[in-house]
Amino acid sequence: MAEEPFQQTPQYEPSRGPWLGLGIGAAIIIAIIAYLIVSSRSSPTRYANPIVVNQQVPADPYAAQLAISDAKMAQAQNILGGTMTYLEAKIANKGDKTVTGASIEVTFKNSLGQVVQRESQPLMVITQREPAMDIVAVNNSPLKPGDSKDFQLTFEHISADWNRQYPELRVTTVVTK
Image (tube, rainbow, N blue to C red; front, side, top):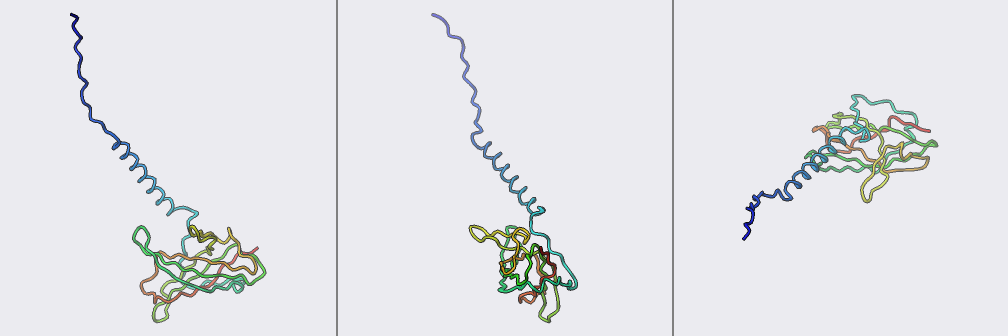
């Protein structure tokens, strides 16, 4: 009778199973989300930062041809827990030139009528509302003579002294062609 060679039973090695792959995948997803949040805050294509101005800026002569109407305001919480204030309105070009750039000066006042915050923001027009709102600088969607478009201004911070009334809106800088 032939002797069988000694067979060693394989040692049990615990399987890491899907947990290792899931952990690595989750870490990659978190890193991507963090990168997107950080890069969107410093992106040059993000809304231009508002310019805080202490005194009224002289208006461009063509600004008289741009009429602002139907202002509405809303507030919403962002994912970081802060409050964003949005102002939407219509702007109409009553002149004979195409507007390719403009700035809107926004003045917030307190209950005594004193200016508590004044800033200037570039004109950002709404080009689409569904499935998501698309807002672009007016140079990407020029305002032709006779046209009117909705626009939106975004405020990350408004003075606590603000009286909660609609701010004064004034077109200051205008670029035409």
